[in-house]
Length: 124
Image (cartoon, rainbow, N blue to C red; front, side, top):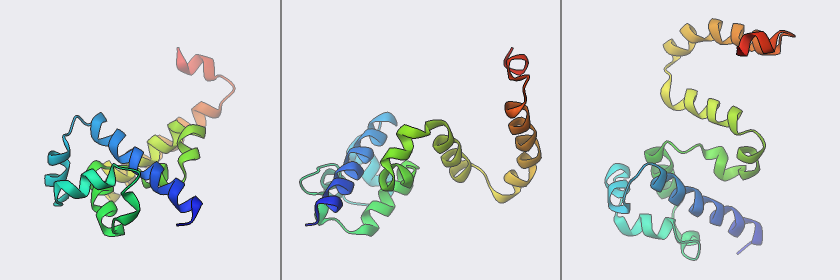
């Protein structure tokens, strides 16, 4: 197996396990939510077995956990810009198109305020 692929699969495996534990789910609970066998979750969380899983299995797991796929594909993004990554993940997993249309004007104003020279006044 390609060394780079193994690194990404290991990162994916660790991200799945971290996300599951952060949501206080047991492997059997995640399997139920993702409509998978518990053994698939066990294999997905084991870096030594992860290369044997189907892509569809990971898609079901990632969606069940509302896991930002960028954390897996671009693990450095999470470390470099956690706030931006978390905001994008929140919007994509929690907001409908109608929500976004409603929120966008206020969001634009908040960004303008954050960029203003009076940022210290805004934070107080």
